[in-house]
Image 1: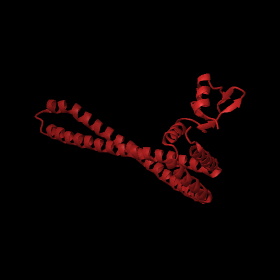
Image 2: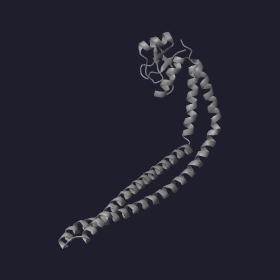
Image 3: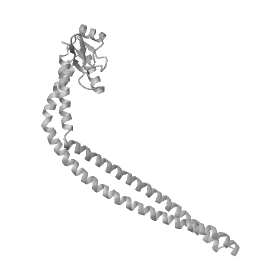
Image 4: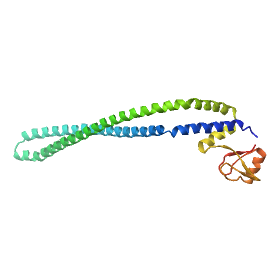
Length: 236
């Protein structure tokens, strides 16, 4: 039978460390910090969206101005043609095109005015979001400082446990340690569990009775895999 002492000690320390961390994460200030962080991210997302929309409108305005300049140029050309026309018939033929271009120009002016109004509203919204971000950041920093102070009180114990775990990780049987780390990533602790014996029945930590083949292996090798939860079951 492989020596389980180091891996069992590692498991005990791992569970203790996770217990300490879980208790810290249940802290009301920790939960509040997460809420404030989410609030900040939500405001930042809205701010970014407003900036992007304002930038898109600014590009649209540039295009409208370009279209307006082209329309003004076309109107100048039509007016020159109108003034140099040979007769009233020729002048009359130019009027529809001139009216069309003037209508376009008025439309462009309205578009620019509307888009500028939208940009002003967006900039006002951005200013408000900046103020909200600053306020949230202040609250975040305050809560964070409180948590760091609380964390400092448990950090020595955490570091002591982690240091011993590093030692055990190097000293324990590699195959068992690899299995432990893989199971802890995918499953729930504990990973190595002592068999519960009642007469000839052997039961795993999960509550399921071991099969006859697993029981036979357990008796011969002092350890086996649970048929149900796949933990390592051992006996002394």
